Length: 239
Image (cartoon, rainbow, N blue to C red; front, top):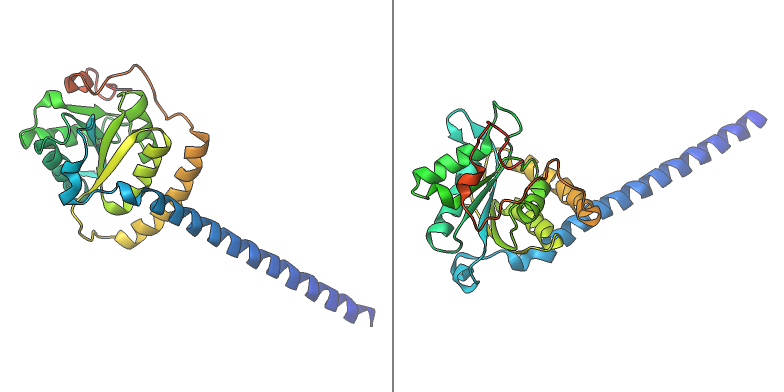
């Protein structure tokens, strides 16, 4: 009899544990998707359509966020970002381009590939700044403000990524607008969208605690000459 009662007690205990875990799971899901929606909705009005770009005053620069570079050059996703950034520059929206990406290793260099692409499209070298330590979206925008002294800018990236970038810039005190790169579906986009939900949650927290990026350093005002960020010793410019 006692053994039977003990089994009943254990069964009830496990039901409570499962119920509590289920509740915690629901709370977690609600939190993750709630923050995701908040981040997106808070900056929707900052995303510009093609016909509204000329309604904003000139900004300090156009920030093009880095993405993968292949042996043949910029990946399709990065190339689309560059094309849009160069188009805006040529329209006179901003006097400078700021290319921010990963150049943390000698054998991998996003920013020089980005600058070279823009020069090939006719942009003068002195109008192109490189941030060699833009290892994440948060770090790119933090360094845009602190190193490159940016106060107003347009960010160019794919729309799914643009919400987070705009949110970070807004929280770091930059007057910011966003222009999405070409609207096409890239390979692996579903997985990318799911990862972005978690990334928005991560940077929501980052924007509360405001951690410093991996590297800071002396200021290089974006109002100056972009050739200041050219590599003097490979990989160390702008760090």
